[in-house]
Image 1 (cartoon, helix red, strand yellow):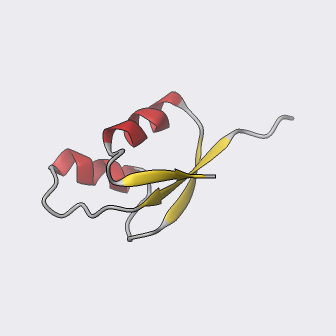
Image 2: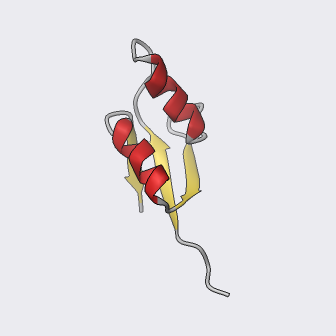
Length: 61
């Protein structure tokens, strides 16, 4: 069985004064606190969410 690819994402920006859909996207990614890092499955839908809030997150190696 092959291991699923994952991607680590860190929240670096604040959702204050952002649109509601951007706040919801951060919560959908599981990012609730500043500098929080989550490991997510590497799928096209996750890439789209990261692209939507690219100014608030960074991909960690």
